Image: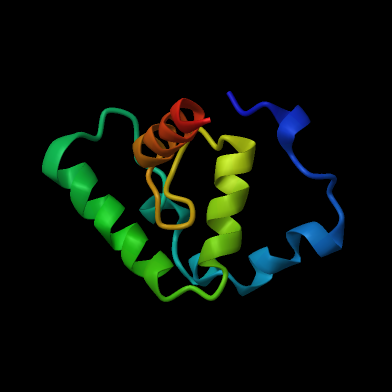
Length: 95
């Protein structure tokens, strides 16, 4: 579960970047896997989501948000939940 204490305060300045996300033009189903989705089907969906992220002007802000908030589900900023967990674990080990 996301720890909401980590989330920034809900001010327009903080969240405004989301209005420019390419994900707004795509179904959320592309970014969030259905329960039980595994293997090639999940990789293909993740790849489609990452393709949307690749050219997104707010990719960095989205990724930073997902890492800071420890978003538990979906592709955010071109990273799956597994990739975010791995990244955070590596960062903790390095510190």
